[in-house]
Image (tube, rainbow, N blue to C red; front, side, top):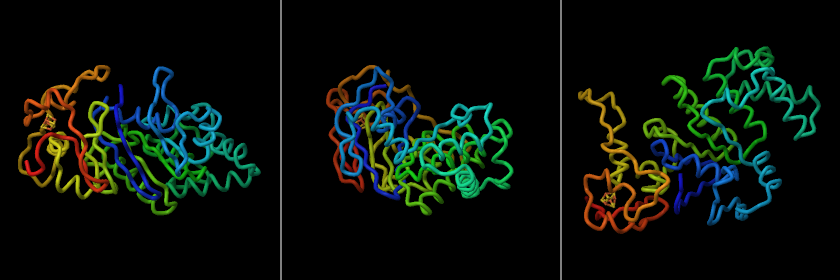
Length: 299
Ligand code: SF4
């Protein structure tokens, strides 16, 4: 997936939701931020971290940044944990290596963090193996592990996708709790606009590697301007509607590898006009609310 001209910013303690369908470039954007793009991915432009340019930093300095300041959690925690090692071994190892703590100090800190993410009986459970936990608990453990380093930015890439609906909401509430307790900025990457409604300060809507609309969550939810955002919102099931029909977005996203002129959404847009096919719309607006569409605002 080629991400093209995406511009994102996040402030301390802020939750930014990056929302889009699978293949829209959300995860590639996050990987670019952390310097983890695959070898055939070359980020261009600028990535400023606390005012410092980090694009092009040597790998050892990026690794240090990832180890100390920016943490990432992924969709399937099982792929990030070693199934043959107890949770205690996996958590404590990082603490003793990076923070020069004794094992006893590190174990106490790990238990405390497991309690923060609401793992009951953490003092005993820390010695269990990954397969002895549910998916939701493993995701909590991954969050605890990432927080041990007290990151200033936590990137959560589809952290709830593999979980059932009740547990999804618990994880989202946990992220909200973490933001408040540690003032951690959170970039929450998801395809589920409904899921992020309760905790996001700001939202960026991505489609085919480009930002379609962005702004304060209240603005994007209450006054969506871009036809793609409106279609995404229409696709969110609502329990207050009598209608039992689930609305999808007609058509398929364009080939992520190809880059055509014009608006990337034009093949699926009900409002398409002649310029949409030829000219890519500029992004107009402010940090509070901006969008990229040829339609006049009031449409
Ligand atoms: Fe639809 Fe045109 Fe706006 Fe794209 S620019 S979203 S095709 S109206």
